Image 1 (cartoon, rainbow, N blue to C red):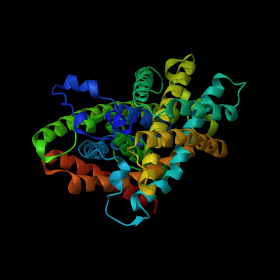
Image 2: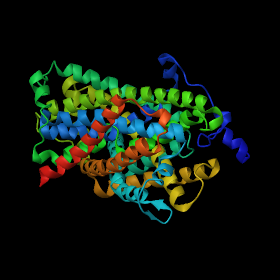
Image 3: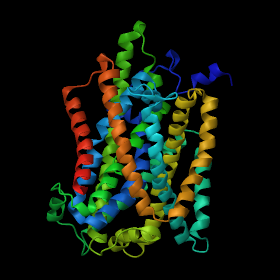
Image 4: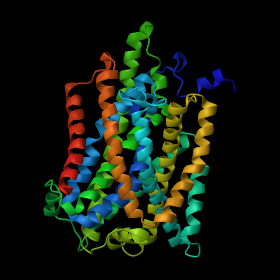
Length: 457
């Protein structure tokens, strides 16, 4: 295929040939949703299933506010990144490379800091590979976790290395939907057990208290639950590959009114995609936390090390009966595996794009991009698996990754402020209500980080 022909189907090349009018009615907009739910698949697996329940198991209900705040306040930062992708057509690191500040070689400081922080993020996703391997070992005890770990890593590589968007979106939606239903049923059944939750329990979790003993795990939970810094960064690629920017078309003076109309229309679709995804993962987050705080905390159980899956299964067997263990294992496999799938798909794009900015290779070239994505799709999971086999402490690995995510979120916040006030075209200026929500989100993100550090001192 020639390069010009490839451009017709290349979502990273924006031309007038790709223009399409946005849907007007909300039910028509539903057909174009998807990018936010790929993020949900990534979010639920590591943050909600492991970190949220671990925080609930350790702290009881007192930290419920942390995970709810984490889910609710970050979405405007995600929206700002999404808007930038739609009107500019820029990838995440193409945009980062234009942030104010020094450069090392071709790359902006923000790219290099992100690369350094990703060392801890490898630990986080390594824990998820380990979690899937542990589940497979529980199903087939004759095959050890050491053997299952590389099998899991290779299987994810096989699904992702070709770089296709549509299969990732569809698999993510099905997997998350199935496990969400199981979790909500468990919360409902919880009220028929000795671990039933009272309104006093919920009220106690909304007092905004944070005991010093739980600061580290709370900071990790804040970084991971809801949409984290790395997920915000991934969102741009899914929006671009869904075609939001391509359908908006290039910004030019000849069709300025038409471009503005299309940009606003596709931004509205993106808003709906983000908000519905936020509602979904917030409900799941609250459900996981309640199960951890009510069942595991009451029994003094904390999901850690190789017993993490066995401990988590008690949230389901204690509400749905002993027969629910296999159902939980199947569900946990689904949600953790979907996280690996969406995380690897996102990471291959992030690292490819970062490499493009510091080396000069053309990320918008379909053949070059797909080649780098394919190579990384085989390398990254092997590193994840190797780290799990080395550390063998999934809970700690996820917590360390969560802290790195919280720091990455500060860089993302800085970029979002720059996008809003330095790059956003005047005709796309949002309402005062939006700006108010954006600054509440920004100050909350900074405030939680400062409060966490102050609590330790």
